[in-house]
Length: 134
Image (cartoon, rainbow, N blue to C red):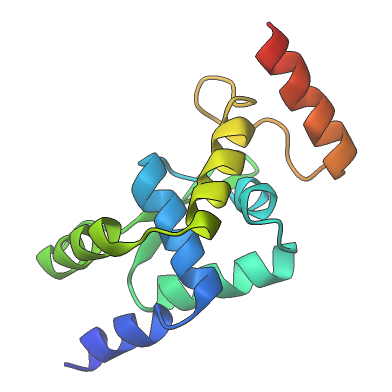
């Protein structure tokens, strides 16, 4: 019962729900810099939220070179059921805007991996514009 309570506490925050929504809707493993750009929040806010959700067993991490990718922990039925419920019940303009920004950011991936890192917004917008013109 304590694990279930911990999971719900971890989801009782707007930022954490926004993060979870991006993972559920994209179906991808994501890095902190991609989440920063999608949510337009600073690194410390994203990292803190991810840490809380990882401690609640909602996420795991995979390291590839210098990159750390977070992924949904779908290894147990409780999480799978929870994720399905949340995915079918999260909808708002804010979530839609987050998804739109994430989809643009994901266009910059190479071989489905982040290669951009943390860059100023002006440079990011320029890269996205170049990518969409190709």
